[in-house]
Amino acid sequence: MKKNQVQFQPGMSLMVFLDRYGSESQCREALAKVRWPGGFRCQDCGHTGHCHLRHRDVYQCNRCKRQVSLTSGTLFAQTKLPLRTWFLAIYLVTQHKNGISALSLRRQLGVSYNTAWLLKQKLMQAMVDRDSDFALGGIVQMDDAYWGGERHGGGTGRGSPGKAPFVAAVQCNGEGHPIAMRMDKVAGFRKKVLAAWAKRYLVPGSAVVSDGLNCFLGVAEADCTHVPMVTGGGPPSEGHPIFWWINTVLGNVKSAMHGTYHALRAKYLQRYLSEFCYRFNRRFDLAALVSRLIVAAVRTPPLTYRLATLDV
Ligand SMILES: [Zn+2]
Image 1: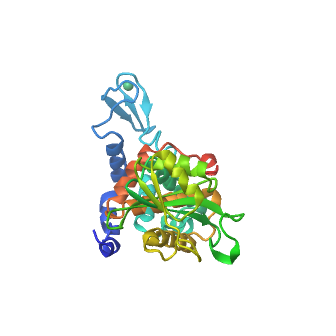
Image 2: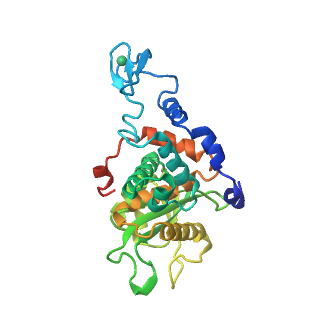
Image 3: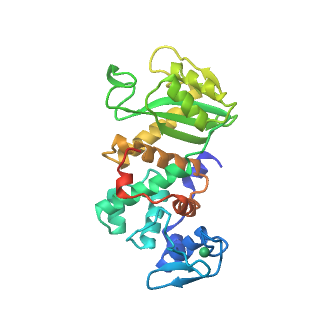
């Protein structure tokens, strides 16, 4: 799919969404289908015979009497919100190219700010988890990036205090077009840190293209080749064609995050980065993002407020 085809694809219309997930029973049915694709199966004994205890809204296994609710063990566990509110949140979060703030979610869902904020953090956590093992391969452009300040501005240089460092990596095909990306918060740009990152997130044998920053040599420890592109004076890498995508993507990420999230705390940065990557990596089929995030949410363990507010 060409770039402009990605931009102009219709995604899922609100009408189609409401036809599919507009009522509570439709949402319940969709959730049950994801959770038990072949019909109910007891998680303890594997038995399929069951009954639905309506007064407590739990499913009970006919053999071992184990009870489970439709949402237990998933991101939706213990929720006081109707599932259709959750699903509408999933729709809004996935169909907005630049993300949607908790403030907008609050308005559109008719819930409190705190509820909207937590809902948003939970859905972003599902995206973090879903892509936690997603590795890039082939030709990978990499750069060091920072949240909370201009990287090249004011002579402050790389890694100034108050900036949260993160790795940005874009996998490109032979024609130099981007296929997939990762952005991960790191402790700093040291060789050891980059080696650990590469072991987890790069397929062995990948070719990493970066500017000459020493820490990128660390990718060799993950059996990857490092191709330094030192571009001489001035801001490193900017303008060099080989870095066009990584710079474009980073520019888009930063302006989208500045535009949508006015006070994004570094503590939660990973979730916002993962949200951006999640959408980017699935951009060829916007409409499918809704059902895919529902699946991801079913597979993500519950996230309490306390857990949600720990460092990510
Ligand atoms: Zn059972």
